[in-house]
Length: 129
Image 1 (spheres, rainbow, N blue to C red):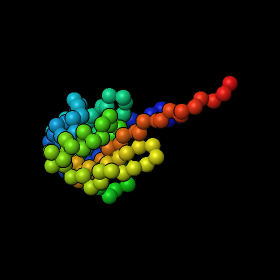
Image 2 (image 1 turned 90 degrees about the horizontal axis):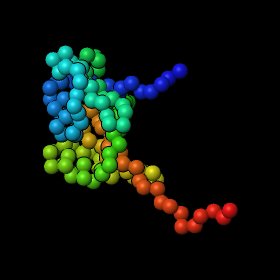
Image 3 (image 1 turned 180 degrees about the horizontal axis):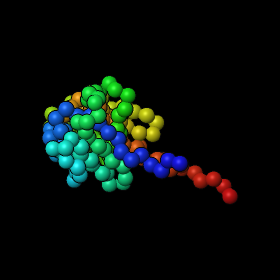
Image 4 (image 1 turned 30 degrees about the vertical axis):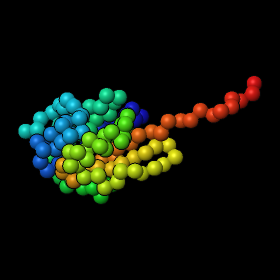
């Protein structure tokens, strides 16, 4: 019945500031929609969409239930760039058996998870046939 996640939506207070954060600071883009009309979308290269809106009736929050997680190719490089831009990074080295994660806070106060899968190690021996 369900086909895919159409979009993840974050509430924002200042649409121009938020759109600029995601486009310039995080490097997403180009965006569609309209800053003036309170709805902007960023399509991601491998599918998925992040929508920003001033119309949700919700307040931005780093402690709310929903959080978007962006898959990244090089977490350390991204974190270095975000630190240089003064982005708030409440957690920078969350480890799991399959991934590394970090958390940053956007210009509006929403939490974003930055996620990098660990490379799978190949076993030294192969099964006998």
